[in-house]
Image (cartoon, helix red, strand yellow):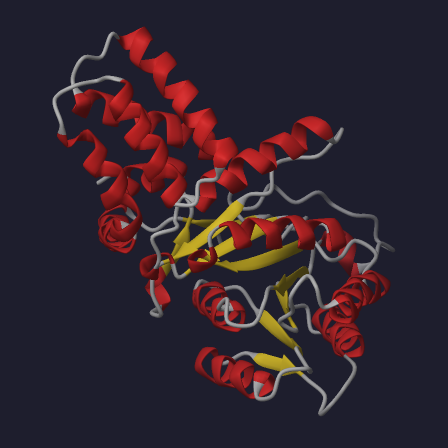
Length: 353
């Protein structure tokens, strides 16, 4: 489960400052307090880690097999290179990890394959570390989050899970059914809304940008904490839909000059290097602020996170002011508890468990 920091109560807030007699009521209100989606307590987190290990078994088994021998030689590194490439880590990330691992082995004077395996965990964790960042809501009211991705990636389901955890922890959530292209998309979102007892802004056959504008406006008027905008699933090659996505973002900004505050892409872990291509294309089109990686339990391509991490860091180095695109959540199943906050070392350990 996610935990959600509540807004400060009157007794927890800083001492009140007396306002002038003619000051508006809003002057007496305390400033908004940011809230951060946190990992669950250690006991529940361990249960999640067990699921993550099981989910990544297809990816990790071929990599871990490399360390079952007794020699640390060129053959081991060649086998590891092949295993990483098969896991869809990509050429660049594979070369990066092998170079870094050789340096760590030399530094620690490691002579046992299991010790080298532990050093590989350190290397992967270090590469993934810049992707580890919490999703924060509450700085803006409402916090407007656009969610996009190709059909089948688990976009609407991920929105439902986020809604459940946010609303269950005390945040008021409003959903925007802006996926007006896909049949039954609105109905699917309405099911999640009914389960979570939250409101949905929708229009029958309406323009996606108009639905998004209405939702943000309603979120402000109704003092909601979060507005989640479900956009149409699309491929980067569907130029008309990508343009529609850009339009939604422009219109959301018209409704709230500071919005959208987050632009999230949901990617399917099964797609491997294609997931990296999606990240690049969507980031170029609308500027991503975070990722949700789903379906890691059904793939042998979990190494793609290493490729995404290397691309994200390269982007930050090349573009002045750019920062790595974080992975906010990873998913290994369909249940509510199967989507959790991303932790780099946990992922690396699970990968080679």
